[in-house]
Image 1 (tube, one colour):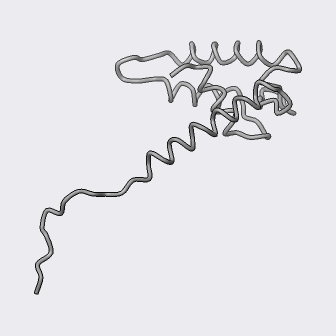
Image 2 (image 1 turned 60 degrees about the vertical axis):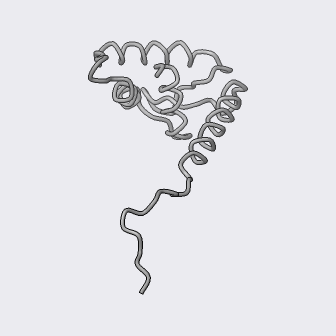
Length: 114
């Protein structure tokens, strides 16, 4: 999965309070690290830090700095974020539809009639 997508997903889940850079980096690291494709935490932290700095400078960008130092959150006034939230809602609706299914498998021991 892409680092950018993971960053935005974590910020979306964090809500309006925001989340610290360290916690965002840890979430992205855990989501993208695997046994066959190991990544360095320091590389992930550097990427997340640069991404948030670049995308929080403009008032119309997707990310904004929070009330405290090192806290970031999604900019709800951004048109880009409004589209992003719609895309995440569509994905979550599709995943819930896939999870709801009926078990039509045959029984191993059929019930005997008395």
